[in-house]
Length: 234
Image (cartoon, rainbow, N blue to C red; front, top):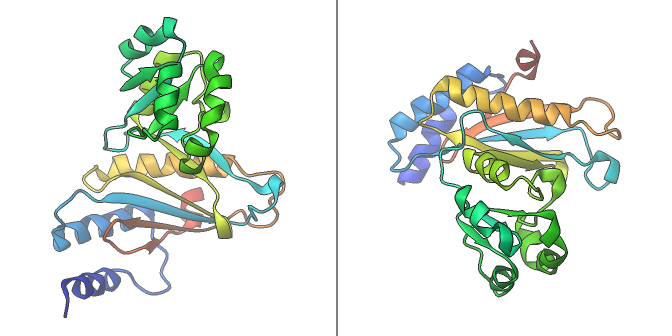
């Protein structure tokens, strides 16, 4: 039997059929599985929430961005587009890549060595030409997501601290990483609750019936564990 099949068999054996788990129970299972499986890397903890929405309708879109109280456990490379007069300000704020029109041309040519793209409002008309490059990758600056801002320092520090951008996908699913498996149980719980409450608060006007349908927690190599949503509300 291959290592993969043994690992998966072990993973599924930890989760009882038809049982819903509390956050604490689910996270404890994932942590124990990580120890037993002895994976050679620090796994990401993921959340999947199935919503009672149809994203094909514009009044049922769920989208937003939420800071993680305890970060995401990874280095976030931030690029800032701004006017030449504010380049030093952006560098001083800790941005990894900073520039004006010349940097726009670099990105247009294929430079994508960053995780977040911030722009000041004054340069956005010029950044618009990057829509076809940045849009499909979810990197296009957007004022609704806090990536178009006059406050460069706050923007850079906020994104470097760790934020989750969430958006409902097909079948009404919101999926996001919320931290690393080596985080403490309480830190993971805080991050999960931050995302859960953000999605709950983003219920669109067009949503009918039950909004929060199902929720699962998993790790990169671990099992998907169904969560008791009633316990989340208590």
